[in-house]
Amino acid sequence: PRSTLFPYTTLFRSFGVVTVNVAASATFTVTTPNDSNDGACTASLCSLRDAVLAADSAGGASTITVPAGTYKITITPTSSDPDTGTQGDFQINNSAQVTINGAGSGSTIIDANNTDRAFDVEQGAGLTLSGMTLENGIPSQYSNGSGDGGAIYSDGALTLSGDVTLRDNSTPSSDYGGAIYTDDNQTVLSITGATFEGNVADEGGGLYLSTS
Image (cartoon, rainbow, N blue to C red; front, top):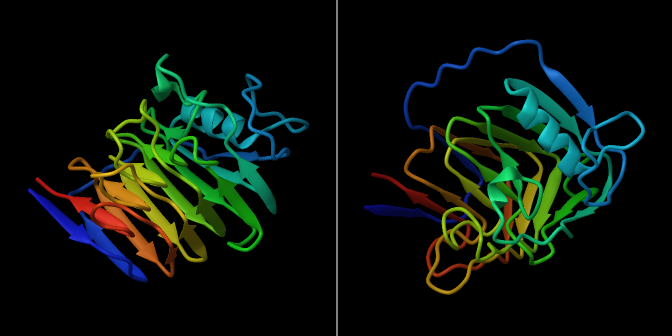
């Protein structure tokens, strides 16, 4: 069965007990607004995609700092395994627990550019966002979860921790969760002080919560 939640400002829901063994936290700082896959995140060159891929590879806990600027997804997803995170949306996988901190919702903009959603959190992984705007997301034909989740599709743990705006995201017709869709395997969903604006879906313009 499905259940639906619409826009709100504060939500916490726990879907079970999650045990995470965390080693030393890795840190990454984004240095370019360009969407590129450079093979590594270095002090001199690190795109947001580079940083997310590095955090996934490291596993465990990582923190990514994203300075003020607009970060537009320009690597269009194709049919060749979009789950790698090298194209389309930013994938959080490999049981990584990733925190991404922006400079504020009016300063750090992640623009999905109507090519895909912004983030996909896979089962066993976790994503925490603060201080940013996610906009212009719409799942591609190659996205996980069909067309659900315009800005974020989560099958793991998701936290929005203050000053996060989700605006002008959407799903294709007959799909769910214009801004956020959480799947049956979601473990934690915590949203505090987020703003939802102009998100559109067949059901759940702000959030669609799927439960088994």
